[in-house]
Length: 343
Image (cartoon, rainbow, N blue to C red):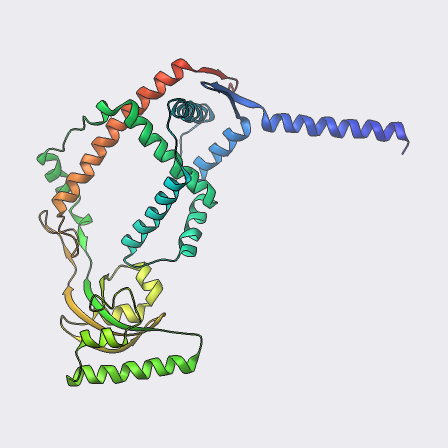
């Protein structure tokens, strides 16, 4: 191949690469409120892919582009008007999100387990933290600019609460559940240590059954669960449908505990994580809840309270959406927006 032909081929390849790069990075729109920012075709395509991954139907690129424009003009407006979110605030939101999952699951989860779930849902921890940041920006900016509108949320009417309960009664089902305490020694990688722990608890179980020691005293003397041994071993409630607990402890352990009667103390039960002596103080059978029944055995809030709060939050969301639409319209009127994508 001669040099002139090689140079010609190289120029064609470079032209093709530059053309492809310009297609990928070409702007679909520009937004300028405090700075000129391009929303690229790549941004638009990636956002469309996210909608498709979520199974959202009936959206087109023009609508999605308008949403991206709204997001950009809102964030620029928030920055212009003094809204600033610190890393420390995001850290707090991240920790609260983990605590909320633990509360729902009824058990602690490790930082690594929570991070794995975040990555599964958001791709990266950084993307999740950015999502938390943007949520807080929306809340703070709306409260700053539209506080009067946000305070005008109508309370749900009693007729709406009763109607919702009648139409959704089957949803208010309380699964079988027990309140339990335990004496616990965790498993190790050493089989001899595990056999010794099991033998120790078998001896403790015999002494409890004979009346030589109380369950509560045995908790203090022998349990290695530092989170519960100052509460008489109390670890809260186990429900029959708690999949997180079943994954953590195992079906055999959970089913054994759910078969116990109030006041009963078990022998040594083995779970996936260790060895337990369990005492059950309350055992509730599964039932449909009445409108004035507590939603859960560990909560004083009733089904009525739950429905009221849910309908109130729906009303609050309607008010917030209207305030958000109003603020975005004001910001768009101030911004220079140039839409290049024509569909």
